[in-house]
Image (cartoon, rainbow over all chains, first blue to last red; front, top):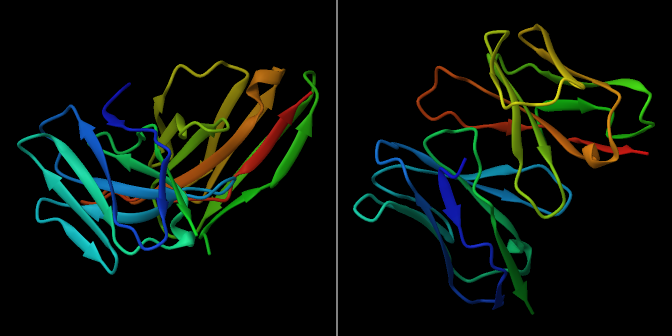
Length: 106
Length: 114
């Protein structure tokens, strides 16, 4: 079931860089989305909820583009600790995208 | 720290064994989930319980048998597993009546089938 699609990456960026991931969705009725972060061998943890007005939390900004049916996650001033896999979840709240791997290098 | 507790953290079993995975939450959530995750893949939904009733079964083989004895507990009974069933098994819960139905995950059980 491919409700959401993600670029698997990996995205390799230097510390301090700004990086953005997209997640495209197929169901135009979708109202809310989520970004989860998963570290290696750990459980996913909710990073941000995404609503029509977008969401910002410190260095992280999530936005929804309804016209093009995608959500984005922007990370500013990347830290080494941001290295993880970022998973999006869409309309069917139980189904994850394939995840985007981020490697932040010193 | 997670508020969803899974036991055991690690499990090694033979193909003829019967074992159970346990999951507990005390957040008053009425939806609980089992996911299976293989290395380098996203979590794959197996089962959803809503108000203690099985609402989704993603065509999971019968060697996996879920059970929800009450609103706080979720079990996954395992019998006659295959080596390809080795994976991280994640339990999650959510408040289905909430408009933003965030999932809270346990730390998982790493299962190896020999």
